[in-house]
Image 1: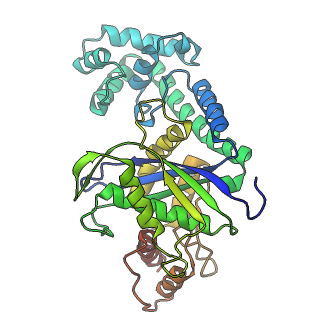
Image 2: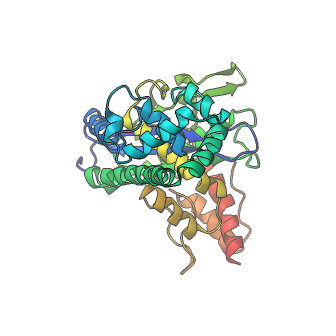
Image 3: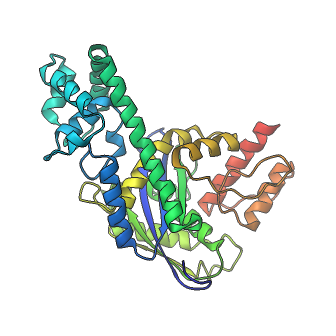
Length: 378
């Protein structure tokens, strides 16, 4: 840990969940880590994750750890004997023998495609796993338990990071997007608009800390986006830089706009192809985004329930503003500075305060969440 006032170096690993192109509620999730040696941390995490999940080739992909048949195919695609080290190796072998001999079209197509197919066909895996359960119920139950154990081990990895790096060095931040939620820029790509919201929350979070220079390197998973100037294209570092610049241009603590977040610097790196040997932090945030999707989509008005569900998944308690009424519970947001807290306090007290400006995005989200939260209490 650095002394008070010293510069701090962070890694912000960013992944998304959802499509961002329809009615679906989607989210961008970030894992923010502070370490004196990120390269050493990456090597240690990579070795730990590979040991915890020997059945799946690197990089682990949470979206491919949902169904029993996915685990079987992933394990059988490994070029070495790692599959034999799995605690459920015998169940994998039995399931694989049945899949190879099966006459079900869905199962046959999965065996032919293998887990290295770029597209994960969840419908086929649902059908194949259902068929496997009828034929080999005990083995299927064993594989299901193993998938749950893998999710638990990844959660324990996050808890281990808190012990290793310190509780003030591991944070999870998120921004949610839905069609019903107005964008800061109506012409902006929904993903880029939500990414901006994530960066705003990151700036707000770090500005709560004692005054010091904070440097953040952002690693964002590659995806497709659409902008008014270029049209549809693969996410470029310039897109990420523009989102970071827009987020840095907000001044949520009431300072003048010519002094925005002057002690915090967010430097995006080239967007990362997840299949091309990513850092372990991206693997962890992929797991987080996948696991948090159902909770974030629910947009639960009960903050206690939401916080409990998030803590059960991540092991990390969500940050929230202090209580504004005894026994009412915390405001369902993170890093909420004073000007915005005043507005939310007005809402809680039933007063008509001044309208919240359209930016920063996370403050607008907080206001909407607070209105739902207060409404649920009445």
